Length: 90
Image (tube, rainbow, N blue to C red; front, side, top):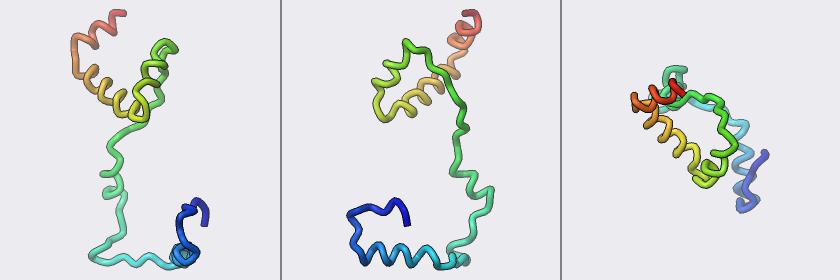
């Protein structure tokens, strides 16, 4: 088993490795997930985005939450009709 935390004891590692070979049992309390059920966990589409070099340091300054900040900024900008019109004219 790869990626096991070094903080686990030998017994815990052994127990986890034994679970790898166990069959998953689905029932009424734990049904098999359908594609539709799984889709509810994917609320974002991923689109590659190029950032101008001048803006890279600004994005980098957001820290680890830069994706959340950029998503929020994009959402705000796309809801601002005046801003959209200005960017089309540029």
